Amino acid sequence: MTAPSLTHVKCADCPIRHRAVCARCDSDELELLDQIKYYRSYEAGQAIIWSGDQMDFVGSVVSGVATLTQTMEDGRTQMVGLLLPSDFVGRPGRDGAAYNVMATTNVMMCCFRKRPFEKLLDETPHISHRLLEMTLDELDAAREWMLVLGRKTAREKIASLLAILARRDSSFDKANFQTESEFELSLTREAMADYLGLTLETVSRQISALKKAGVIVLEGKRHVIVPDMGRLLEEAGDDSDGGLLA
Amino acid sequence: MTAPSLTHVKCADCPIRHRAVCARCDSDELELLDQIKYYRSYEAGQAIIWSGDQMDFVGSVVSGVATLTQTMEDGRTQMVGLLLPSDFVGRPGRDGAAYNVMATTNVMMCCFRKRPFEKLLDETPHISHRLLEMTLDELDAAREWMLVLGRKTAREKIASLLAILARRDSSFDKANFQTESEFELSLTREAMADYLGLTLETVSRQISALKKAGVIVLEGKRHVIVPDMGRLLEEAGDDSDGGLLA
DNA sequence: CGTCCGGTTGATTAGACTCAAGCAGAGTGG
DNA sequence: CCACTCTGCTTGAGTCTAATCAACCGGACG
Image 1: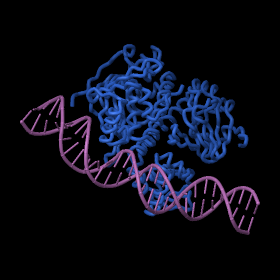
Image 2: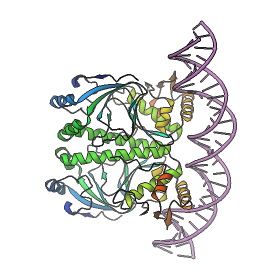
Image 3: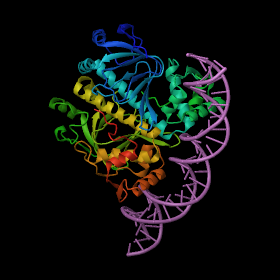
Image 4: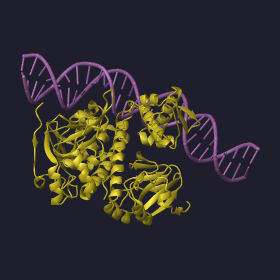
């Protein structure tokens, strides 16, 4: 294992400046955050945090993809969150980590020392309000996922996952409704299975089935082309609006 | 349908005063909340909110049990939250309801007019911080539930639900570990099925199985006695600590 | 060249679903 | 008061979806 690379980047130059927990901060507030933060990189496959670990930082994903997973003693594991750039990691006010956080690709984190961040949170409404908003969004996403896990068939689950990845991964700039979409699959079959509550064999079979049905086109094993998003959403069992609300 | 009963109760006399979103408020802040709130009652079985409805209030459950559910066009439904006294309903900053909220028993709600509440939220850290804390707790609960939905067997699911209800329903005053527990089941078999991603027949069968195995004792169909919580947690596939962290 | 990893595919099995019948208790109306 | 119905629940028989077990493929890498 290589030593983690620690670096420091000015907040103003940060790629997630306008989406992360710091999004609403003015330049004075950014300055305060700047003083308690550091960048840290993790390699693909590496653990960022183990469940039960003492946490000395919270932070944001700057680049890359990480997963939040829960494991039972017998090894069954369930992914409970997919962390993309700007997503927040860690729970202010709690010392022990509740989940495993694993880097799926190479990941850059912007870490805030925990105690000073908690202090800032108390004193800076721009931060606490933004964190509240992000947490409410995550709660909605988790609840959406509960429907997928509890009530959808294997095929619908796969289609749902692909739809989410298509929406987030591909730059869906505007009213998220170009009919075509194309993106890189950053998860292994096993990770997808853990996300969906399936086995990796079932994931593989259903992806093959969707390919055979022409719902998706694969270039290699990881590059996905969706010729018709409407068709994919149909397969996902979603009605057209995809459950997004103002 | 009877007209809703609207009443007003002083915050100081409110049974959820120290657990709800108002928990941290001082008396001045309570006074402000008092001016924008009203109590409202709902009968068992009644809808409190329909998904997609315009929301003109947010609020707290004062007494009773309500459920948060999501429904697909073909009727498949998944419960995504169980609302007990002190739980918060509604999302500040969003006008449309994202879920159905149904009264399972008779329910009393403390409703805050939405716009004024949002204004208070902006100006009152005691409220926004408490709401953040409660939202983080709900997110943890939702993630815990994702493991149940995605990876547990029918029997483990039932045991998990009973364990949750036992912990919350029965007055688990202290270190939540008396070995014995006893509580009233406020959910129908169908509601349990919707919670667990099962059919009601499977719920019925697994409850019978747990009864036959002596894990639980039923008095009538709704009163549950758990002679040994450790045994129940074993059946739930949880290790002894039940996943609670400081 | 052999091995490992991620992925695919096939055969069989098991667990939950579906369809169906029936029970107990509460409420209703003749 | 009794028959009738309704709701919530239980139980059984048969089916089907996804899990399990197993073989195999292809590319990367030492």
